[in-house]
Length: 90
View 1: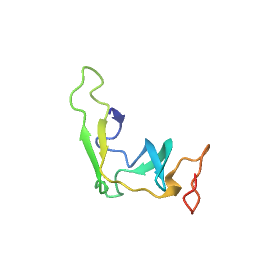
View 2: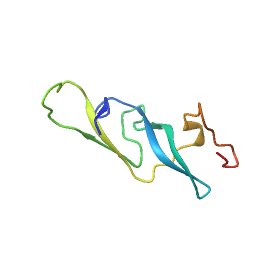
View 3: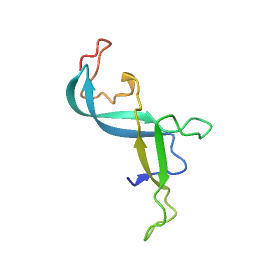
View 4: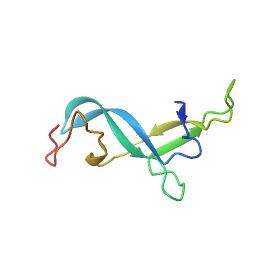
């Protein structure tokens, strides 16, 4: 909710998600996720909605994002404190 620049302009976002690797719960991790292609079409599995009129700052492009079975490569893990190797080990 309230993702700045999501409604109309953003191509990428950082998503914090519960991570399961090879059936094991590995906790919450941060990922860089593409939400729009270069031609501004929304990527498969992503839904983007405008937050609509607000009490103030209506010029800010806030949006709501939802994901449905979006898979991302392990290279998208923002891995300053954790990593997943090619075998799937965190």
